[in-house]
Image 1 (cartoon, rainbow, N blue to C red):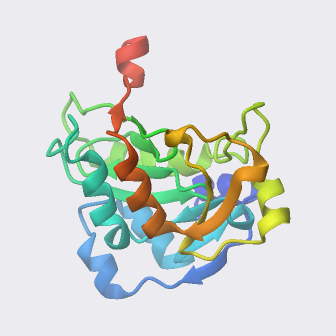
Image 2: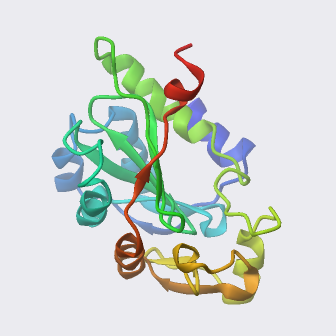
Length: 220
């Protein structure tokens, strides 16, 4: 365990891992060169697992590829680079990493928003690519992986108490969906199968790519 993942597990309190699926050698080989070596080492040691009682999950990109292709196909991100879902939250927010950039693209399936990572505009640096995935994990907190209700109150712990823990293929969602005018209220939350739900949510509205951090604030 390196310092980045130690911060994630211990300092931010995401330990222990739950519902772990070991990652086989074929999967590790398949993604060699497509994701950072540091991420492959996390997969090898911790598998695809839930953390923080299931508030945050590392994911098998192969299982999510058809989903992510549907979300980005008609957007400006399509064919920019190869994108892979490497993590997700209890509420189905997807964290996506590209094979030619250092930052994370996030999909909020409930609002049909895509917050893009910045397109690489410098020489690709494998060492930086590796370091940035470590930073991705070390900067995760219980707050920034939660979902917030209409009163800006975190939902995860209340959902866990009301609906019970999630399996690796489940998520919490809203019924009616937010895209259809539903309300982000604990009384409207239910537990569903994640792949079916993400497919349904994608069809409710055209995904909107929001401005990236660089577009808003300028390059640092």
